[in-house]
Length: 454
Image (cartoon, rainbow, N blue to C red; front, top):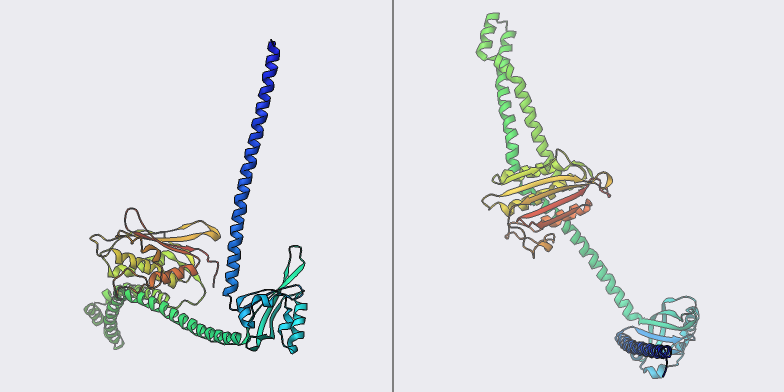
């Protein structure tokens, strides 16, 4: 019998042999798995190669231009179907043919020189004649060299098209180019007219409110001037009496009769009120001039709060039932075309008013402010309404030209599209979103100092 030490040694040896066999089996399994993966990869690569070959063959067959692949000496190795039809010979009959041999004698040297030159640089638009199935045909050839991975010349690729087709295509291209230029000019003119038309349409919606706004100061000036005219008549009568030598008592009685003391005390207030009314008229006219101008001048400083207040004031003259909650600072200075920005704000407010004016309690919230400081500072203005919001399907199309959710005759569909273009030209952003609590929110963002200041 073996002692315990011998038994332990034998058991350890058997355990080591078993682990060695298990390691061998695992290695064989891994090697087999690698072979299977390799086989799968090879099959996939073969499939891709077959697909690539089929694709290459289908492209060659579909090409209307002639294509010839030659070796480095210019002997044909492969041609496409167009070249077979052009020559009236199949690819087998063309294999090994030296390309200059397909040319008439007077073009033989030209083709030979092309094969020499293409070894160093591609040849473009070479006019040459080749013997075709129906006689000699002029071709425009492009020749390029082929190199192997080590940079050694291994062949030449020749592509060409009959000059008759090229000349016809060139004439057609010129005619199409001229038509495109004319169409582009017409579209550009139409676009300019549409932009100005939409601006005038926006201005037209404000005419009633502006007329009422102008009527107040003008009526005030008109009334004051009538009062000044009456006072002037009294003063002229009094000074005529002074000049005629009336006595002190007569002048005193006349002064009381004409109530000159009251007239003189009213003169300052009448003049100040007239000047105030005239200034108000001037402000309104300046706003109108800014809004209606084409704004082709350079960008100038403007106050976004003033623009918003002016647009809001005009629109609410025609919609007094709308409740407005304003959260506006005293001033927000920016730089741009104030008339164009005025048009954008008018469109945003008018769209919001149109969406809510049939509600029992139509309400707007107008907010504005500034984010950041320095060159990256941005002005922002928000117009929020308590309307039904915008249909989800319509949101992506809001800024498309001629898209409108308003009834026929109530909108051109250009307001938001033109506004988007104006804001983009100023380097800003314009967005419209629905709110969870209901209604829509339009947000205008403008850089304080636009990068393109022209």
